[in-house]
Length: 416
Ligand code: ADP
Ligand code: ASP
Ligand code: MG
Image 1: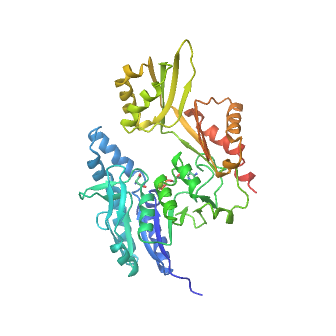
Image 2: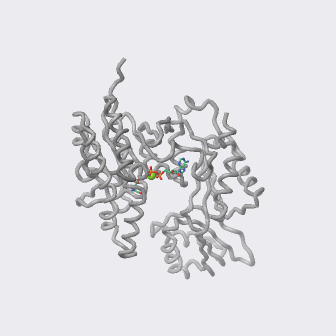
């Protein structure tokens, strides 16, 4: 029985595109999908390390670079790989052509972390329905003014899902350098277990607390449009991980794990303000200027009065915003009334995520106990409905992720 034709968006990350030999391998995977009778659009990342190199060049040119020009520079990495893949596919006899963000166009607003407004699907529809393979650079779009815009680091995942939604694809396959989504980063914990399936909601939460296997926005988009999403390896032909709705997860997992995954994030910095007056309005006076400056504050801890009426407030901000945050607080020093400001970038946020938490108390307590047993001091805590996060000294990253992974029964050997 012949299978119905499917429309598929295949996305390949930087490691998969690093060099002509790997691009040739990717071309083989793409051609095989097309030869099975499917309609294929391909989204590519820049070669591994290339975007970092380009970002670095911008900073070297001027530390306070213009985001408009930054986008012109960093979007170029994907232009190179899209062209090279189209050349390679054509050389293999496939009917492939590249289409830049401005050609489709992928309409976006803002610079350096632009949002996709709309993708015109006409050109893409035409190419796919006539049997052509469209190769599209990820990470880029075009503004209303016709300027190149980029979608933030890891943004090719978001390009892929957005294109899948616009083209009404049957599914979006994200090919990367690991076999799928694991219970934690397999590069930190070799005993991490590959998940057959994970819910959109859990993946969204894991990505937002540091599991960079998917850009958070791509998961939000897939969830919103119910796009079938899959993460799999471009190096090994093995089943990957399906990202599915809450209603479907039981098909893959009869029993709910308490915790689905553990993630870590080293890109937060701790700010501590001491000698704060213990009166209404103090906290508001601190966070108002930060909000005004668009600085995202994450974990917050207030410690009670030490001597007399002075209190201490600790919170975290993205490391990239630290200097800006300190400058804003110094400006507001008089109205806030703090004594001293201290900062620490040698911290890590470790989070346990799972929808099983909704029906189970005691996850946080277990996390704290496990860390205490190892003598690891917790600097701050935050929780949500399906997540507990702790802030720790950065040196403990690997140990903490490993012991928590074991404590929650996630190690591969313990799996049923
Ligand atoms: P790509 O270049 O393909 O977009 P990324 O480097 O952005 O790849 O994402 C893949 C990486 O994500 C893996 O190499 C792995 O180290 C990391 N990672 C972090 N957390 C997880 C997780 N829970 N499961 C799988 N990979 C993870
Ligand atoms: N090349 C871009 C980055 O490294 C986008 C991506 O690969 O998703 O962030
Ligand atoms: Mg990525």
